[in-house]
Length: 144
Image 1 (cartoon, helix red, strand yellow):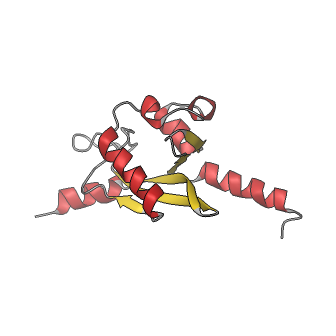
Image 2 (image 1 turned 135 degrees about the horizontal axis):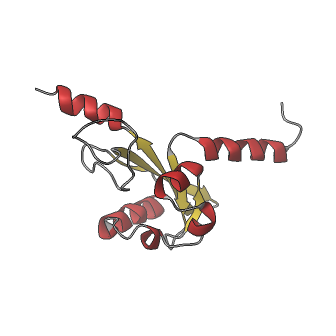
C-alpha cells in the first residue's frame, strides 16, 4: 500500500515512462500533451521539445489526412480505434533493433487510439505504439 495519492501518481508516471511501447497523447488541436521515454528514445525528440508541439510538426512524414480522420473519429465517437501492421506497417518511421539482413527496415507497429474522457467529452487521445516486428517477420518469412 502506498502512503498517499501522490506516491501512487508518481509510481503510475514511472510505469508509463518505462513502458516498452510508445505512449503519447494529443489534445483536440493535435498538440502533444504527454510523451513517454520510448517516444523520446525512438524519435530522438526529447519530452521538453515534444510537449505543446503539433504532432504533424514533429513528424511531417505522417499520413496527415488519414491520421486527422482517425483522431477526429476518436474525439467525436468517444471510442478507441486501432491500426494493424498488416494494413499500415508503420505510422512512425522508427528503426527496429533486430539484426536482420535484408527484409524489414522499419519497426512494424500496431497502434491503438484511446479517448481520454473527462466529464462529458474527450479531452485528449492517447496513442500506444506496439513493436510487432518479430511477429511480422515470422509471418512474412514463414507464409507459403
